[in-house]
Length: 113
Length: 112
Image (cartoon, rainbow over all chains, first blue to last red; front, side, top):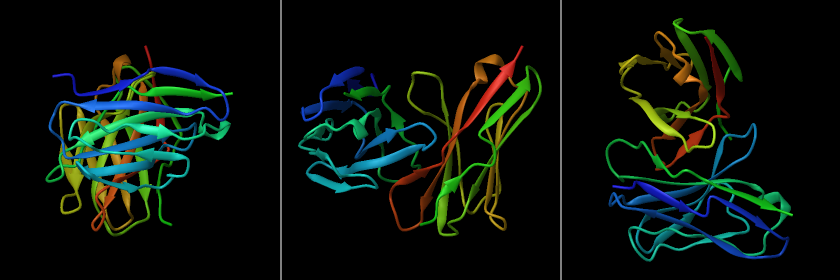
């Protein structure tokens, strides 16, 4: 049981490049989210999904796309990277009912130069 | 909008002492709260949760207290150990919303 797996762990992009951050969970959780973590600002929600085929925007969605074709996978796409997207990105999952505690991945540290 | 916040950005304690980490929230519609621990280079880890119909919940060496009157949440760690050194986040969930809002975090440092 691996929990939530994120790849890559580190990435450097040039401004304007695109890339996809991968996230997979093996706990059959319905709910998945992407957060970014910046110094002094806590975790901010980018996009979330309540189940396969359903996604919605969070607090800071601009510049990011997501899709949820399966329960297990929830990739995050940066369309045209900007220095403002330099951050640590966390994927998380949880069950949709009952307790709402997330299981987080170990994060992707992204630097846009 | 209303946000989760924290009183103290840093806290330093001696090993063996008790730690208290505080969190102020302003959204009276929040019905569920969680404390997370984040060690350096890792993702946040669930510690303990509490629903708004409770005012206290205990776990192993940790206790969460909820005071809805003053919209205050605290995490108490008994007999703090060096392994407790981390950043601690509180998070709240609104009653009509599925997702969590996180505070900025408090860094706990345990001195041997």
